[in-house]
Image (cartoon, rainbow, N blue to C red):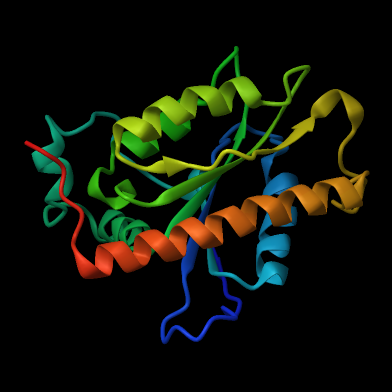
Length: 211
């Protein structure tokens, strides 16, 4: 796991925090190329302090707790898991970098999402996807349903790459930088607006789900 920081241009005393979640855990995965590029764009954008969470470096138990009550109570978890929960809880927004496996998103992402609960609530989630003919967009559409159930707000615009078109060169730079960087900026602009609005709203009135 690594943390990258940038300076928020607004006058807020505490900059907004963005957690970028690299979802693939496969060997010889393509995800780090996509994630590294997006993190650089997020730093350049300046709207957030950026924290990168690589699920390949994240150890979670195979079995989930019985229910949401146990997910909220993190006291009994390992120090590593408590630290991970704290990173998510402190984030004002998220970006999930996901491939598409068999018409959907990887199990590693679902397991990671399911191991947390209140950390996602009333926060914006963006997506950067990559895959075959569908450019990972079917994975994104599935993840929208998952995050909606957790009371998160997903961004309309998606940054997506078609693996059949060699979207990055050998140096990890987009083959079509104008289009890719422009799409990243649009997503980050949306995230900044929503993260600011929801951060302010949570500060005034803590978010609570109905019983």
